[in-house]
Image (cartoon, rainbow, N blue to C red; front, side, top):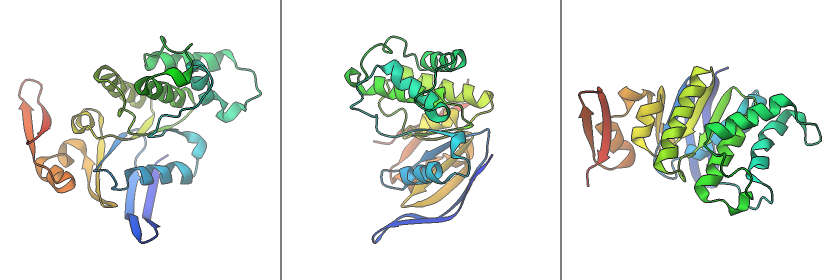
Length: 236
């Protein structure tokens, strides 16, 4: 199932948040959305989640980590299984396998018995991602899932989305880390002021000129001839 957006415009009062967006998110790929704050990234993914033809095929990690939950972290992960079962059905062995796999993928075994409200921002983020991937889904959609994660778990998240793609899943993720985007993305959208400025293969789209156009900041490309990879740093 591809996800297609046709001539999408969203306005709040006199402000145009999304301006004639047209794009096809192809299935079984990792799509990364890049752009400055306020360019419409979150509005776009919220639209995708709320207007998809088959919403039950999507699982979503919001930008904010949910607080005020008087339950264990493990019980929060289990919420991912309720989308089909309802809250009054007995958990099966298959449900628990999915929950435990998600907890393991997010390296969260050490916090699942703690009260969710007592966790750090990064720990809450890992639990919310685990909740999302415990669900049965075809598309994982994430809004800045690495914002509160330390470097170890940012790298871990990159490995997770690659593994999910290998399992036949599709991913849309908003991130700010340009080098992480280069590492995981099949396709990149670069947004500014409610419009898609550039889209295409990550290695083609992410370049000094396009980064300057989108972020209004100079970047320097660092080439690693041994691994044949590129990284970008700010020119400050």
